[in-house]
Length: 401
Image (tube, rainbow, N blue to C red):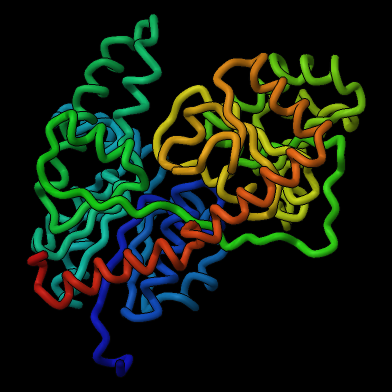
């Protein structure tokens, strides 16, 4: 297709997508890069300070145009108050600005995009300037599901929490009716939305990984690895749970083991775990996959959550067996005891880790089966082929699917 005649796609995202640290940024940058193979992709992204857009040149290499809107923290606070009074969920109000809305409207009018892709419900209000038949809502997760699973905080904020949970569930469930297509990463997220009133079709397109086994990297028999963006509170909680409640159980059986925490922006409490011996907290590293691949076991002691855990897919992809809770496996149709080991409680997780540290045959079997699972359908290109087909169908039919 001649580049000058290629269909145009506008991606609106609440955060600048590079560096791809965190599941939401990792997913959207892969979507942008993949769609840019066949479409002219423009990006409209929000940022708060210059440090967030330090990789702007890299994004320009992928896209036709990049448009930025600076939204200070004070502006976000004002937006949150105004949007809350309008009845919007905080997740949406926090990112909605009339000035940015006008900019998006001008872009849509000037460029006549074939498809507008709103990344997360945080940006759906901006898509009103486009015909609903043009809009793909990349929801990723059902955010309200986390609120229901966490339960109610017994604090002065309980009333706000209850209101936000209800607003989120209503907003997310109604959102698919407002657009041509909605996309989530797992059947679990789709089913939650349907249970709360969504009736329009919802597509499930999962995450993937481009990682693969690294030749010459030998696992350290002592190392239990955790990989994740530590700025994300559930990841922070997982690290603390493993370090404080599970690792001592493993150490009692395997005194030489160590816990390697790989991830950017660790909190103060996670940094305090670092002793350089039993627990090593790396912070930001250039090649996390290299460290992960050197682990004997990867852990995902997740209590609750939504979506698909990239840490599970990435560990499998480099051949490192995973021990996870059932919550960490949601949205990933891997077979327990074949592709991955599962346990819900601390004792069980510790026992599964000990099995993998000790049993070479079990380690080899889970490693090989996990890698085969990834190759069968969880490479990024395998998942994003479906995304490209979805966008192409909307272009061809004018939004009628």
